[in-house]
Length: 262
Image (cartoon, rainbow, N blue to C red; front, side, top):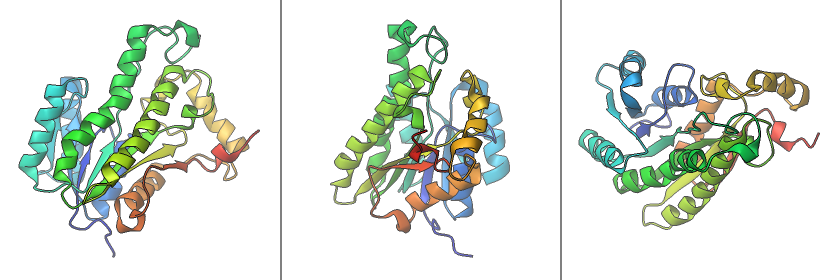
């Protein structure tokens, strides 16, 4: 069986549990032959993420703490990665956060506090820049960076509110990073996958999220959203030689819902 990522090394952020999109992509990368290095966020998730990772990817799989709100933590994480490998070929950015506050994930958009706005953009969008800066020196043979976004970045999805703005910023960062990193001697490609609704713990925090599935069944050309396996396959394509000329793009995996006007 062909393994398009055989011999490649990937860094995976954002795994929280087996329903995480990041987990689905990591599983696909692993099955495609890649060696993986994982992050976890905070002591609360440490034990569960380490147990999950080593159960599915091997007892010797490297895992390290990463808090993208801290430059010191990012530096420590990138330093840890450098102790595990002399080369990185791909990075998955699967990090997003909007604090619980008025207007952030439900209610009136005008109620969003300044502090919540700043924090969400810092963690959801600036973190891509910070991680690219830290990991890219290890991409000595070039590589691929993939981030996760959602259609609400471009059109209004009621209650997605602050996270929609943060995803729009993330997509813009992706394009500028693609230009910046693509001009290196060993080019690094940077893309987004815009996934349709997936039953993750993070998604359940959005008011009215469960009703989105019914809308996709009614409106999307394929009459459904997407699966973790399909997202993994798309991320594998972007990280492989098949995606060698693709950069700065936002690829939709949503059953075609994004093409519909009504």
